[in-house]
Length: 128
Image (cartoon, rainbow, N blue to C red; front, side, top):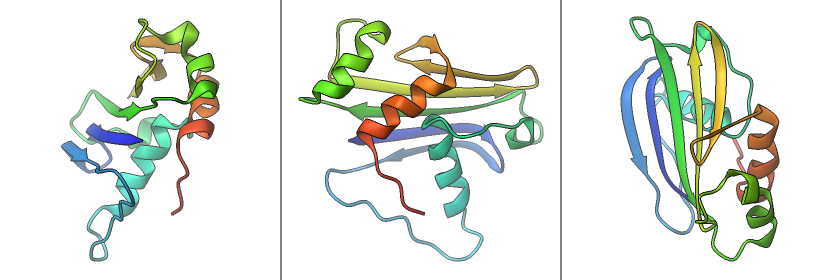
């Protein structure tokens, strides 16, 4: 389950923290409110394509970080063995985009972006 999402320096967002609750979470708002930007940021931590164009004007880098709870998920636990500090029930996925490129992290361990995609396929369904 996605517990929280932190975004900084991404597109038009200076800094934003979003908390999610168990169950269905729906993002609504008027045209231009930033729903697509929020979904785009979420796609970044799930292994989506990154570009330096995504860095907010005036920021040196964009950072998107998602905190997940993955209790009792054997598939995810197996994937996390190489990227964990022994806490297999909590997961942090992070992307950093700077002029030097994009970096991906799982629980603060640097990983290839493909690792984010592999883990994401087991923990989240995103529609939008």
